[in-house]
Image: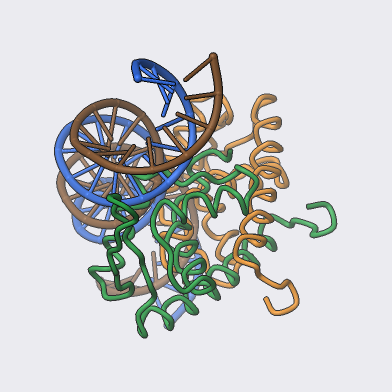
Length: 112
Length: 112
DNA sequence: CAAAGATACATAGTTTTCTTATGCATTGAT
DNA sequence: ATCAATGCATAAGAAAACTATGTATCTTTG
C-alpha cells in the first residue's frame, strides 16, 4: 500500500480508464479489479469511490443501470458519449504528467 | 498546466528530490526550479510550498539557515540525516507508484 | 445451523492538502 | 517613479479522500 497522499487525484482517471476498457462495471467490481491489477498496492475505499462515481454521474460523464442479482442490488456504470471523450483526455493528461514527473525526479526507467 | 488534482500528493516528493540534488535551496528558488524543469507545466504556489516546508522542518526532515542578501531575508533548507533517508524512500515509493499506475492504465511507454 | 466473511450499496463527519487571497518588504528595470 | 520580480508568511475556504458507520444479502466453514 502506498502512502495515501500519492493516490489522491488519480481516482477519477482510474475509474474512467477501467470503464473505457470494460464497458460496464459496478462499484464493488471496480475496487476488486484495481486490487487485482495492482497486486493489492492500490485499494480503493468505498468512502472515496462511491461519492466519486456519483459526482461523475451528476456531471453526465457516466450513466447507470440498476440490476437485481437475487435480492441484492447492483448498480452498473457506463461511459456516456461525453464520458468517452473525457476519459481519453484524462488518461493522456495523466500520461503526460507522469512523463513530466519522471523527468523532474530524474527517474531512470531501467532502475524503476 | 495540469488540472490541479494531479499534482496533489507529489509536492513533498518534489521538495525532497530537489533538496537531495541541490543540498541547499530556499523557497522561491524551489518554485523557479520546478517551473524551469517542467517547462512551466508545474508551478508551485507559495501558499502550498511554504506550509509544506514548515511541516517538513517541524518533522525534523529539514533544517534551516537564514541569510541576508542585502536587506532581504533568505531561508535555506537542507535535508537532515533523517531527511536523506526519507527522501530516498519517498522517491522510490513514487517511482514504484508510477509503475503501478502505468500498468493499471496500460500506458505504452512508446506512445507517451 | 450459526457465525463470519464476502458482496454491495450509501452517507456523515473529519482530516489532509491545496488554492485563493492577502500582507509586508526589498531590489531591479523602464 | 512605478511596475515586475524577489522573498517571506499566513488565514480562510474548497476539494478530495479517509474513517466510521449503517443496511442488507449471500456464501463458506466450523
